[in-house]
Length: 194
Image 1: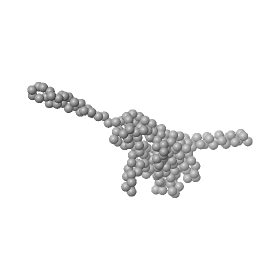
Image 2: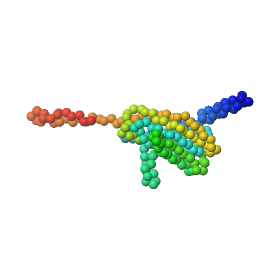
Image 3: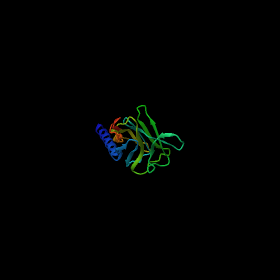
Image 4: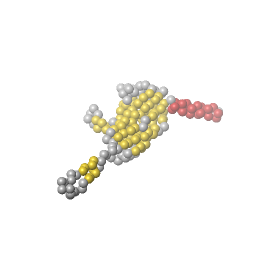
């Protein structure tokens, strides 16, 4: 009896690992320049038909999700489902958690599954704040959960990705004063402004 139970547990673990291998969530690294925004593209490659998901996005210090104005003239975070993957009954919601992470969730009121088996599922536009420093920092998608209509939940491992940020270079401006005809200089003859 113990042997059969062990075999069943082993089979369940193997099937769970196999299912996770056939469904992946990835995010490419992001590059951005001071004064610009960048898009975080969350890609779902799936063999399983999913109808909802939830994930938490933690950005490094100095970065935040950009805002946009919705159809009701309200300022909202610039997070959107990919129109090529969602169906008309899919809804997107988000909430800023006490930790500062942003929980992003989507579901279908009709229990409809997302279209296709590969591609971007959600995009998040980010921007740098005054606290951003040049260099590369790590962002994380965590607590990633996709569910099927049955419902069966699929947990995914955390996804870490890099944000490479470059500040605009300031070109020094050189101002040279005019020397009077007498040949004497009354003030500084060269000022470098940065």
